[in-house]
Length: 325
Image (cartoon, rainbow, N blue to C red; front, side, top):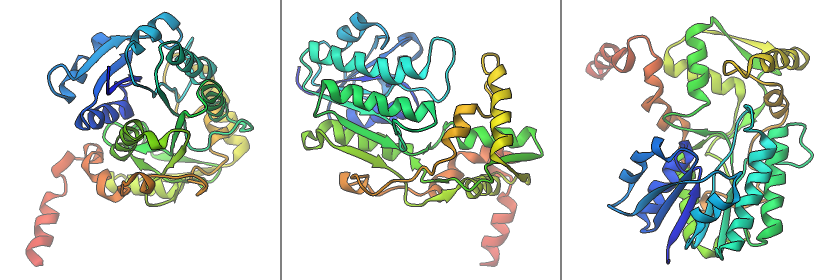
């Protein structure tokens, strides 16, 4: 079946954008997820019959093979930011990635695209980044021409980064700056990541390449918190937390992680010890013909919900300023 791509984890934050751009490019898309009944709206992202939603679990080989039946390309976006129960980094990032690649080979799929993470390193002290690198290696062991995509922190409406800290700021008079807040990031817009994934899938020339996706600017963690607070109109203390204290805090949070989402985990503290910016050694958004979207252009479109009074809280001030101009 020509131009059919199976997208594992396609109903998530990044996956929704990737599916939308793949549909625009004229591809038939099969979204493979654990609970398809929760993703019926995915079919609305394309023309009638263009997008299908099927059940698959990347820990279950027969279900993966069924999802890949007749596909031209496999796109695996399944991943975790923290471990919960059976959903562990090793199970999803490594074994799951290998399962998808091996099933693709069994089903005769021509190409495999694997989404990893910027900073993936087999020697990283962070289990998240270490297993992302191991997942890349597992896929390339099956498909030497697999394409790897490594995005930095992904932002946009519904993200788990700026929304998370903006919500914390509503409840707390202060926000912690792990390690002093000096770690640098290169946030990338979710729409740009979705478009990049679609272009990688549709362009066979990207086979065997590794892409690092970062936005147009690099910022320290402290600078990102300042931008978030400025956009939400919240005035909060930013308190530097030394690494030993941060590690202890992460250990305490690990104890309650199974009950409530923790503000930080031990593994996330370890990941924050290294900058998360593109290395320049691999192609990126510009090589795919995409102009990176800035934070400043997008943050106001969704962080307004955290302002006191909401979207129109400062409307009078803006109108007065416009009148003086």
